[in-house]
Image 1 (cartoon, rainbow, N blue to C red):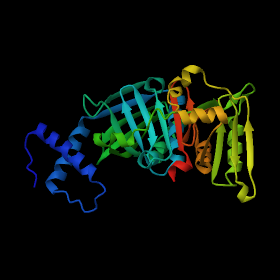
Image 2: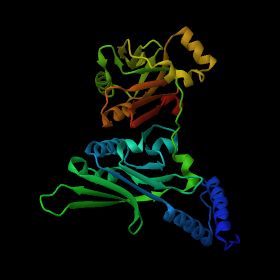
Image 3: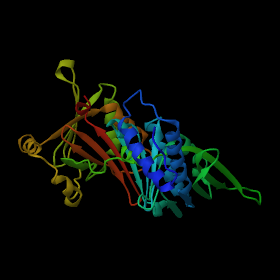
Image 4: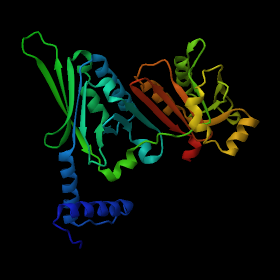
Length: 352
């Protein structure tokens, strides 16, 4: 049996050491944790939660609609909970499946002062001034559905209503002299600091070739989406090939199956050198040899997952960037001054 100190500082140290020990043994099904230790761990997290504060306010209807559409995109891609991460200068939304299993993920990076009139937060501690929340994206999205049409303002803050909640308060137009307000309390789970690395998407995934889904005639994003949508009924995987000259090929089917479908996109816009500088250093000798010999880098991905993102995306833009890493993954990026949306999809070969 562990001896638990009464000193609060010592208790925090004990909690951290015990959590590290327990997380290292998560695969053990026969792990028995003494009740007094569970009480200590739970009390430590509750103490931290009481100190965490967050509140924001949106007064512009377009900002409310932006947040609503981003949550709508996340809820369409997964019926599981998502992670909301708040820092003093960033507001993040990310899905969980990939983070836990190494598969696909959606990551949204929002610049707070671009959509929030007010943004205040106090995180886990002084040296880790962040908050990670586990929340059902669909429920949070539904709380903004009506306000996104006509609300005068929306306030979001952390509260405790028989459990931790994210409270969404909106003032709606009213013919009466008194104002009409709606309040939703969305249940949340606070993620412990030791779990943060599990729920933080990789920022730099590297790539060999990159292009924008646009050319001299304008955006071809709608055409690309239509091609993928038609191809998804013909097979499970699609091969995407891209060179560094702005050419891309889509291929589905094999000779043994008796059919194949190809689509070519030429003269696509290429990102400038500043955008590709970091990934140029990440290319290995084998990939450079492929470029010299074949010119095209290739990756096979699940076509239904790709079509799901293109269909679920509610963030309106005519400019999408596609990054490709040979035989490893693709990454699709939608970016504006206020919001950056990333969709990462690994190769089907790497998952086998």
